[in-house]
Image (cartoon, rainbow, N blue to C red):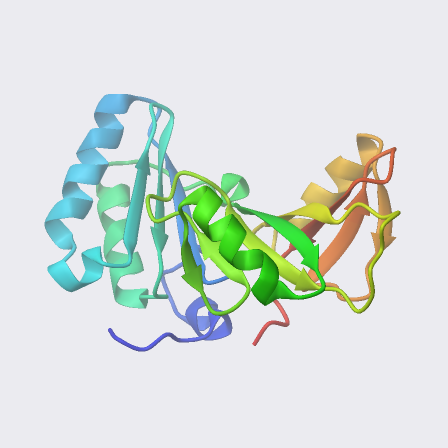
Length: 209
């Protein structure tokens, strides 16, 4: 597989119910309950993934579970990974899948991004996004400002969640003392804020195609 399909095309396919699109990746979390079962799952994934597939495959092993992300929305590979998890009786839990980005509002992105790239040691995608090559830290993006806003917080978090989990995540944030700033771009993203006005966006893939 060499071409990126859309998130909608991925989710329209059969037997990918364990997976969720988050910005440019699709991810699945498998609740292993132990490091030993997680290692067994990772070992099987290592056996079934080819050399080309390894280039866009990321596996995060923890004692409680394994999170697998695909930089290409590879339906066939996703199905194979889900199949080995099922064989090992390891269930998927899409409620915990997410991608967190730190976003800075900028007037001239070209003046700002090189600093953050050097400081973080990140790689770059396009002209407004940085990523951790080792997949340890959050993504870092720029959002275009039309005019300077010195009295407004110019940095916020973007939290990409599964499209079927956004409502629950927003409800939890509101119940915890937050408030809705704007839903003008929903379901692509909702803008929320804490009690002091610090903002965060809850984002999904829906509407981005």
